[in-house]
Figure 1: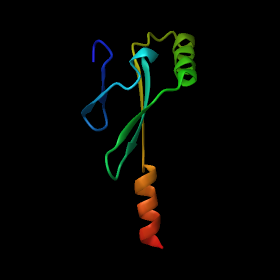
Figure 2: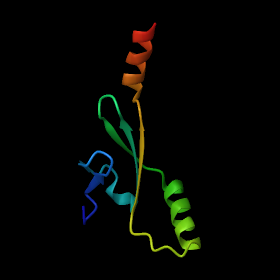
Figure 3: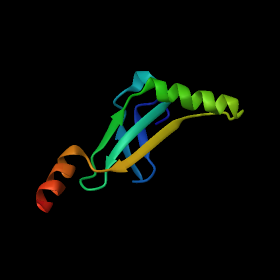
Amino acid sequence: MADGRAHRLETLNAFVVCAHPQHGASVIFSICDVCGTAEEISDLRLGRRIADWARLARFKLDRTIVEMHGRCQDCGRTERASHA
């Protein structure tokens, strides 16, 4: 984690390998609550917006990890099919 090659998913208490080590400190994950798949998303604009907010708030930002929970496309498709 210290050298940016792994991330800790706080809500799952798990570690994942970094898919975008060149993109700095802001990381976004989509986590499927059905199958547990976690996908790292790279969005430099969101990282810049968070850093801007931190600067305005005079907050020293060390790292940003955003975790989104829901259902992945495959699990959403399976759920819709079972209700049909």
